[in-house]
Image (cartoon, rainbow, N blue to C red; front, side):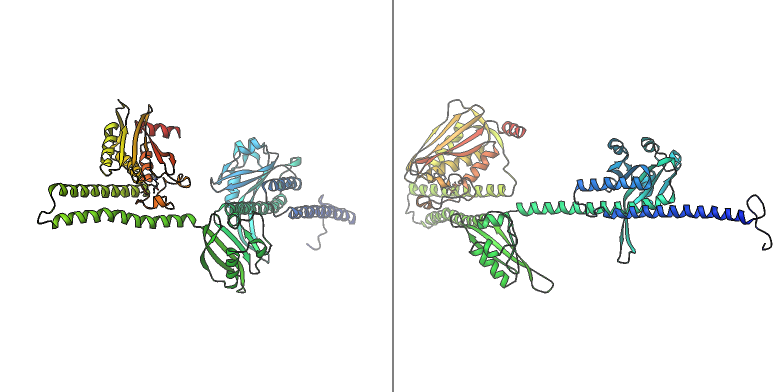
Length: 578
Ligand code: ADP
């Protein structure tokens, strides 16, 4: 070959001139190549400046603006008509268009959702590799309707991959969150491998921006939720650092200390926390940093009891980092506990009293071998025993009902037609049997007829109201039980001439265990504090209610009761209405 002179393309012997021409041609090719490389480098540089796109996007509008800039740059760099990002939605396992897209209307975007394994988008998403389509609708993976909708001539689709790299820029993790499409290369050209490489670079940046934004938005949403929760919790929270500088005081803590709610962070604890129990507690916890729980009482006029828990968080150097003090308002819990303790002791007392009396009379009768007591006296004793047994039965049935209500089982009604006149007279008569210094008057309108009610429960309601009227008028007097026909309902007023109820207790006497225990007159009367609570629940079970209609200390009270004549109809219409 070496002795064969080189020939040009026309087969002529090489002359220095033709060689020069050939060289000139190569020089042009090289220049062109250099220009293209330069162009590519410029493109790459532009693409790299995409890093100037803020990588921390924290709000939805910010993300939208950033993406709008990004898709425009993509269109410019890759020279294409349309640019569209699709994100994977894990809930539906679909790919949906993430606005803003370039050259794609919102209406079109809405029609482009695809299952995560369909079409070119699905393939790219699943395989994590780009697809170039220069065959228009002929591409085997293309979804024809979508391509027609966007008038696609050619396209590239690349994965949106989040790449995690270590310090030496080595890839340590990769996760695909969606895909990026460009459609229709300008000037009717085909897409090239360079375009694919460029687009992949841009897609990596887009993925980073999107995923950062998602993380930030999620974090800020969580932070907002936490802040809301923190502000709305009823538990008081105070955080101070080891130097006694306030980090946080939530609204409940401000209310507890009687200071306005505002941001106190950065201020010295002694300037924020008023002198007293709370400040003492915080100072002590700072100097003796072990976890502790104590009880403190705050507020002079209306004292509140708080259970205070202090915990210190230690830094790596073992020093206290922050002290967190949590305050639970346990006033109500303590009140109920007190009432319960009181209740237990009054109930045992209430049970023991009739039992002692029964035991005493039975023992007396048993011991009377010689017949010291005549028949009349013996009958009297038996009557007392009978009354005391009734008292016990009433009390036990009250207790059982309370426990039913408390356990949420509710009070089942056993409805039947009840002749109100008969029933009221019967209850009043038996109550009259227990007292000599009261006169019980019953007024029921003529022809009231029957109402639907649970007889035993109605007896219990009236028993409680009438026995209270008697009990709380120890001086005696008239106790009237007056029924009124109100059409669909009946009203019963029980009025006594007794001690009345001090104003401060009127709202609470229907509460469980509530007794007027700070009044001399009331204190002397035995009771358990569940009578009116039960009356109210029993009335409500019938679709009715009970209330204190009138009361005057030293003059007496009127308790009223309204019951529908047909509880089932009343309850049904009530639940329809509400
Ligand atoms: P108790 O078993 O203590 O009587 P109740 O629930 O029946 O419990 O009543 C609650 C409180 O309401 C009573 O402790 C009493 O102080 C007050 N009270 C109830 N009925 C009357 C009344 N007719 N007159 C005055 N005070 C009453």
